[in-house]
Image (cartoon, rainbow, N blue to C red; front, top):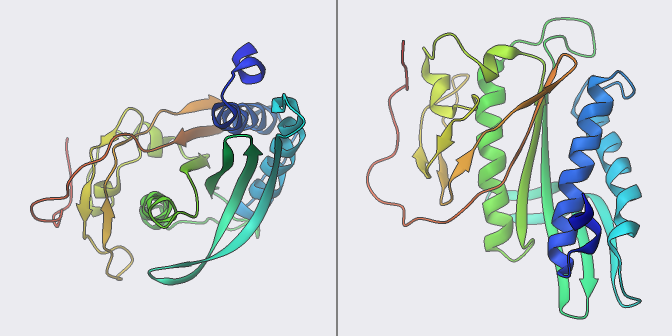
Amino acid sequence: MSEFITDPEFESRLRKAISLAWAIFARKVGGGLIPINKEASMQLQYAYVLKQLLPLILQRSYESADIELETGVKTSSGPNNIDILARGASQLGDVSIAVELKCYRTYAASGGTRGAHDIFMKDVYEDLQILEEYIARGLASRGIASVMNDMERFVFPKVKNGKCWAYDISEGHTFQGGQIEIPIGGKPVSINLAKSYTFNWLKFGTFWFTEVEGTGGMELKGSPISQPKSSG
């Protein structure tokens, strides 16, 4: 906790503020203090917590930090919006960290069951891919995927049968990078990740939370994953 404020590197303080805000947000949601019924409310509530923390990381008069919501950018697939863009400035230059958010509720805001769990898993991987593109295009220096859900079988599945497990987000799973081309919902998918990603979940109340950031990098070789991953 003390490093959050005392770390001499500005970018590191900004990154730690993002994690601390996520930890606070998770506990408040789990404790029933913040109601979340869909991704839009998740974005607003988490952004509010993060914005309150940012002044605490500033150590010099020339340092500044703030957040933007739904920042419009151009990507290879067309226009896109960054869920949350944390921007900072210090004597060493500007820093920007992109945060993409995903929320899965068993029951939708309308009260009906949501379903489409396979699409949610695929969407998490698509967020990782777009975060890598933000970095590659110089739109952000780092990219974070913050994910919450209330379905335990995402985290601790009894079996991993079905093509959706090519997009494995279960506890402790590491995707080492590479390509996945397994259609979901009858639509083609092509995901190409250069970095490695590990999913570590924490439970608060009836919700599970994880924060994922890519590490390392790899030269993409070989054929894409084109068969469902399964295990008994």
